[in-house]
Structure formats: structure tokens, C-alpha cells
Image 1 (cartoon, rainbow, N blue to C red):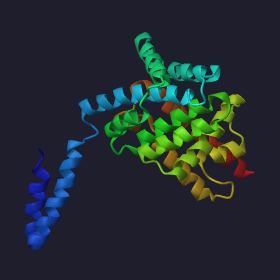
Image 2 (image 1 turned 30 degrees about the vertical axis):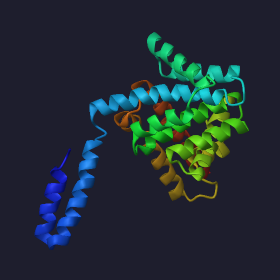
Image 3 (image 1 turned 90 degrees about the horizontal axis):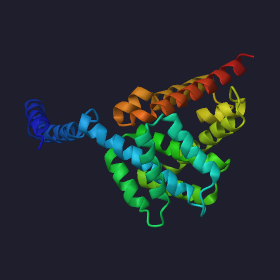
Image 4 (image 1 turned 45 degrees about the vertical axis):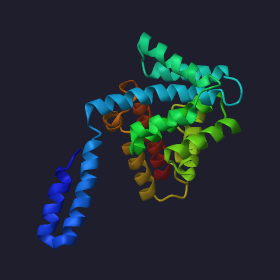
Length: 257
């Protein structure tokens, strides 16, 4: 049990504010001790998060793909593209396929999987956001997000603490991203660019820049890997930042005219 924070906090609080300060100091120290116990830079914890993130990503991807009763060829191809993006070794690809198939099984316990994932990730919001983005990307594989898939994703977001409005914003952003990829455009259209950044066409230049910087920070590969994103998914995060930057450049060029 960690007690250093509570001890130092209590002593310092008592010296400055007396008994009340000591109580406050113990509480603050207690929160510090909890933070140290959940240190995101703990190598063992990082490895555990990476392992769970990997298996849950493909298992839940398989579960969502089966939501409408059958797994389409497009959804299988999307799962294969994610594996290709990750440049998996033969053994890792075999494991990813096994997890995808596990998620397709009738007895798959979605809530238990989400519980394990949430417990491992703790309060790493950007990591959880990346997880949802990968699932949305796979769900849009056949060109649309059907109602059954949408309901499962809403349920997943609820279990992981993602507000509904945040999910709807991600859905618009990923939908625009998917349309861009489907049309094989070298650059986003203005409409897609605004959707990718999650802002309206009437947003000020300052708000557009703020949205861009926030998204780049959320998708920064090194930051995500340090919090537990599997190394194999770094390429996906890099592609996300490139797409966000291209959308921002599209809007900037449009507004210069």
C-alpha cells in the first residue's frame, strides 16, 4: 500500500493550516498515491493494456460485424485491411483472426469484454476514443452504418463512458473519412474536411485551428503508444494525424480564396 503522499500531505497541511489542513493534505496525498499506483508509464501495466486492447479490438470488431446477422465480404476485407495496416507478423495475424472469430460467436459476452477493456485503460480517454474510431471504421466498411451496428456502438460507448453527443460527432467524422477513402480522393472535399475536424462551415478560423490542434493531440502516435496503444497500431494513428492535417489544409486553402 502506498502511503508517501498521505504522510507528506498530512504533515505539510498541518504545518500550514493546522488540523483542517492536515485532513485536506491527507486527502490530496491519497489521490496522489492512487495516481502513482496507476502509473501509466509502468511497463508491466502498459504491456497488459496493449494485450487487452489488441484482443478486444478484433473480438468486438467481429461482434459488430455479425450484428446484422451475417458478416459481409466488405467487413471481412476491412478487418484484413486493419491487420495489413498494422503489418502483423504471421502469428499476430493468426491471433487477430482468432479474436475476430471469437467475437462472432453466439455466446460472446460483450459486456464482460468491455469491462476488462475499461478496467485496463482506466481513464485514458484518448486511448478509448481511438478504440471507438477503429470500430466505427470497420462498421462503415460496407458503405453504411446499419441500425444494429449503431445500437451496439451506442451501447459500447455507454459502457466506456463516452457521451452520446461525442459518439455522434465521431460518427460524422468517421463517415466523412470513409467516404473520402471510398472515392479514393487525394484530398478531402470542403464538406468532408469540416466533418473530419468536427466543426461547422461557419466556425471561426480560431475554432478551426483549436479543433485541429485538439485532434492532433488526441491522435499523436507517441502519446497513444505511451498510454498503451499496441505498437502495431501506431501506423493507424499516424494515418489519422495525416488525414486530420490534410483536412485542416483543405479548409485553410479554401478560406484564403
